Image (cartoon, rainbow, N blue to C red; front, side):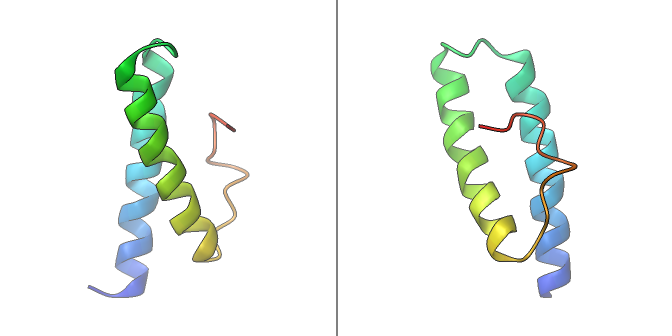
Length: 60
């Protein structure tokens, strides 16, 4: 898998995860698990040089 493909997939996962997070109760265990993955994806994308300003709706 090329770096470009990996970045594309990570962006798709990041935006999809945020949709689920916005639908979930912030005090739930499911939300806490999603928050961990959100942070991981955010680090991966930032390290890849992706500007998250436009796609980071959660901003946590």
